[in-house]
Image 1 (cartoon, rainbow, N blue to C red):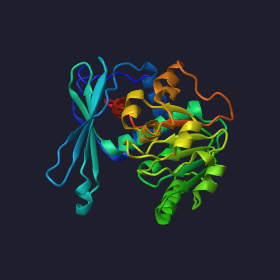
Image 2 (cartoon, rainbow, N blue to C red):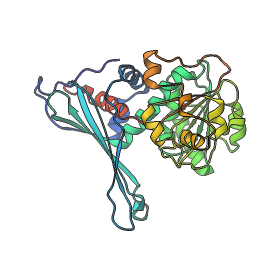
Image 3 (cartoon, one colour):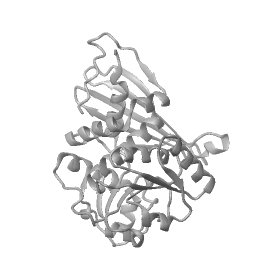
Image 4 (cartoon, helix red, strand yellow):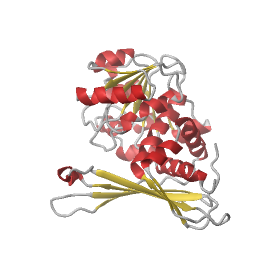
Amino acid sequence: MRLRAPRALEDGNTELRSYTAAEVNAALDYPRLVEALRDAFRQGGEAMPVRQSYEVGVPGAPAHLLTMPAWQRGRTLGVKLVTVFPQNAARGLGAVSSLYVLFDGETGVPLAMIDGEALTNRRTAAASALASSYLSRPNSKVLLMVGTGHLAAHLPAAHAAVRPIEKVLVWGRQPERTAMLAGKLRKEGLNAAAVGDLTAALAEADIVSCATTSTEPLVLGRHLRPGMHVDLVGAFTPQMRESDDAAIERARVYVDTYSGTKAEAGDLLQPIAAGRWSADKICGDLHELASGAKPGRGDVDEVTLFKSVGAAIEDLTAAALVDAGRGV
């Protein structure tokens, strides 16, 4: 799916639009978003510089501003602005806030301001589904969701858009939150159930998707069955990890982008530092999978693993899709 370039000047509609989280979720249905991301990654190119982080806090209260720009020359350009203020919990506020600003690629005219959290959740889940379309077995029916946060609420539906998921198992550290997420997924039409035994759930799953901020391994290599696909999207710093060294050693590993994962993915950086693994064992990224430059799953028994830390081209693609109805 190729998105048309915005025509803000041609049709005279230069109004700066503002899109709420509800509008973002309504605009980004997963089948459509997955195909838009497939096309964007297939094209590849220069559009994905590594995110920049700036320390903006005061003494005793560190805080950060992150910028994630991306562009398609002559078509669209945009930037996601993210703030991380850990002390916000004491004020009853979330630690992370974000906003996406979309510009016309021909004129630089601002087109839209978009709720950043909703955009991030949808594009991240869709990127995992895109990877799954190449890496999981086509008949995968059981999904294990590890984690109960905002992103975990999106991943099952995204995976179900590319695979015939019949059952969703939900595991989290807090039983009440786990039950709440399972209930939410059931209201959305998924056959979801909360589980308390992670090892037993892994024994049943065809796909395990992790969206946590864990610094200790949750998915262990010795518990992975032949043919499983592991989707790691939660740990996004070198200090975090959701899998152990054995899981990385056992799997065919793919990433969203080489630059991002080599800088931030603790799941890969920690086994590299331990001398258990090396970056040259990465089998491919989303550009190579989407373009056909690298193969995906080779046989029904191999274990595949996708590590995602997020890429700015995903935000740009999703933002352009949200704003695609301008003038309609």
